[in-house]
Length: 160
Image (cartoon, rainbow, N blue to C red; front, top):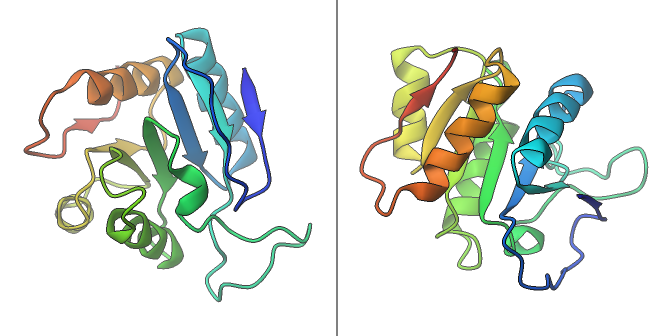
């Protein structure tokens, strides 16, 4: 079940055996592929917008996610980009918001350089995933994040 809602809307979920994954992924093809894989493996998925780099409104009039709207998710996946700081700024806001700080966060990155992995660890990400990761490996990695009882390091899931 794909749940689409306007950023900022609080959604009360009925108890479900299907964990909810919030995807903040700007690339339409990647978002569709990962959402499909997650739904096929037993997850509900909601798509959220990241704020733009200047905090401006989106072209459709919606605002970027503000953390509060994601408080019902079991895991939040945020795409980061080497050429833009707004993905990491969104990660920072989510991890410092009292309503989302305890939700495991997966950083979807373009590369796995030492600086990227260090940044993910610094931002308290539960895992790091390379954007080129096959969808089935991505879904398995998200399941592993949910299955872990304590997070001490940020594991990497990249390819099968």
